[in-house]
Length: 538
Ligand code: HEM
Image (cartoon, rainbow, N blue to C red; front, side, top):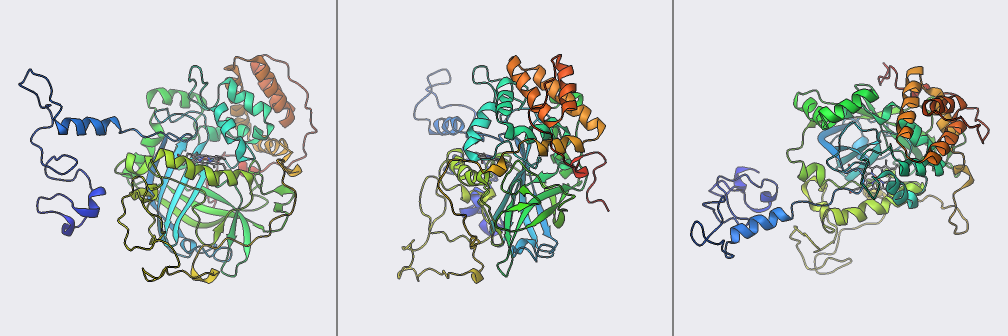
């Protein structure tokens, strides 16, 4: 706050007070009354009973009693940083999004996370990592809520409660905190073979990244870009770390969890404080927006699929630099609210059924987590664009709205500036054709192949990466109590590759089953291997 918002005593006043709380020259009550003592309750004599009339005592303890808010139902543990995104202008032919135009600089906030562990869990567990970015663009907030693995466990959001129930700690003993290494998780992924691709990815080295600064990020779903002429293109978003992609090995990861459970958040904060600002290039793979929404036979609406980068190269469209640590973990990293529905003109969704459920879930959970519907007013969530939304009142309302007519049209507040049409800078949904059909609870036939993409992943790995994958399966399955779960998982592995299955079976001292599906004839994708991976490769 500037000097004009300070009172003569140095206390911030008015609207700025929320942003600069605790900045004053002396201690006060929450009502701003100056205190002379905060270390002793008011008593009837030094050894006498504490008096109920001590408002300061009651106010102080009451507030403390309510300091905790629910942790995120998933991705509870995270670390955040502020930064800037600079557009290259190279996406101009496919999207009109203003923040992607050449040299436009947009403030961002990024939160990295693990998925399964609670808020106080360790950093270097084997898990998927969240990579969520909030772009405060001139056209409103755009959130890219991705992971460090390009595919997901399930194809339909209606199964998200199931997969999370299976992955979270067992309901009886609440162990383990890590994603894997327990019967319910392996029970789920061996019974739901659509999870095979994600599972082999995080049994690989990407499940134990060396640093948040050295992870790729993926939007996972296919999105739809819209250009100034209204033409649409399907895309997948990729973050490519300038430091290259690096992982821990399992022994390191386990040791670090004991020695420094805050390893990843410390690494991020220390690097930024030292001026070693981490950077990622944002890139897109582009695909023609055909009615089939497939590319070279790959269903683009199936979030368990990748499109190999050799088939559709990633084209850089901008640069992300993280250059400032949060000053308050709670106000920024904890209260930030990402949502896949936060879109800006030029970026739209597709009919991926996993994405559809996410569009509901984030807003819904944040109403509980952040205490009502007004969390977009929290400083970390406020758009850097004017907001005029006619929303009023509600729990934790902090805005003082002007006018008397929060509806439109109206004749009392000068009407409401609103013009329909695509040329006004408004977000207009791409008018894509909706496929015709009957209402059904069914997956399309094209979602049925659960093994050829995991097979491509396995075939793309270098010998050392294969060794890590086998070791990870042996370790994790070795921790399961249920023999049937181990055996069913070996069957899944046989359907990926008999040699992978044999090596894991040997490690577990079990017989290797034969495949029950024909092995797909897929070419390896060298881009999937992390060995020597530095990007861009100039
Ligand atoms: C949180 C990614 C699927 C529900 C998150 C976060 C990330 C993420 C990165 C953490 C955001 C943060 O740092 O605050 C993904 C990806 C998915 C996926 C990449 C699949 C491609 C789903 C699905 C659902 C879901 C299918 C529900 C149907 C949630 C919820 C949270 C969350 C409830 C907590 C949000 C909050 O409390 O603010 N997800 N997720 N996610 N996700 Fe997802």
